[in-house]
Image (cartoon, rainbow, N blue to C red; front, side, top):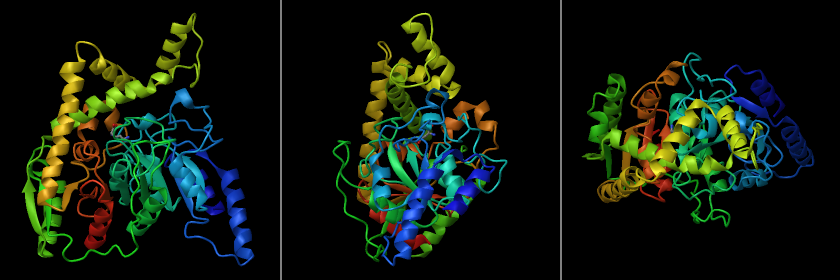
Length: 441
Ligand code: GLN
């Protein structure tokens, strides 16, 4: 624990918002005493992990990488994190990320852009960039990211490790700062499928404090694919046959598909919504939800209050001075699509498209067991480039957001293409996703 805290402290990738050193060393000392006394310890006991800085951990700073919350301390602990603490795992760090989860590059943060683990000129991906880099660099054994539209899967891909977005509702969101509540998911990032499985099992389960949760069966260690479990996999033709994909990503993906065919699995091409439709549906709904969720941050109960001449002025100055440009763009966009005169045309249309997307998935999973896709159409951009062109950044989410809208379980594995392969199964079938990943290894 001490060694990893030192590595985190001196690292130049900007992964750390705050270190939990006192807590971590205290917990580690207790594990040492148990070991010295010859007591048996649990599987995760003493294992150091990281936490994206959007999770409540009682008494710790929880900033969401924003000026607005830079002094905010959590009054309670998130359910998913509490479950890990109960197993004896040791939290080392609150990790840098895009402010409130808004971004795909971990540059929208007051703590400095997170640098990619493999090439420091490139972005780490986002929004859970600090979490992915900490795992890739072995500063943490695993980290807990948050995935609303790709924020675990895309940085996992950019740093060549594993990242899972479980089925929506499998893990409680209680104590995860809300971005877009209808797609927010708690997601583990790790270097092996087995670590993902263990951490997923610990965090899963029904929680009275999050009414969207459900009870799931633990995934067993013997998650080996039986020959009859996968007959057919599919991929979306229009994700691949488009000018919007890098030639190399396309070629690598098709060669990965070729290898799967060679293993005797049937591969089907599927029809799906255009990427532009997926991206605009996701951003319409995500902006609407975040505008609503962030309305409470006005300097009254929460936030770095900046006094104005009257209360209205105080709200307005507090919010304009403390929110980043990207977050303001989303709040303005979200309030617009929710306002009278626009909501029927835009927001309701978004909801309707989302239903159609879900129906499409249900139909697809009658034909195929797994859907494969690249994680991103592009390779990781250089630091600074995404900030110049927000629309290009939104479009780079083309392959992750659809599965979020469908609330499906989906995993990034570090193979296939430069930014990885995304393995998706039907709702509640997280086990099959992990089995298929093992099969591909
Ligand atoms: N890049 C997407 C967005 O900015 C997804 C982010 C996330 O999953 N938190 O909304």
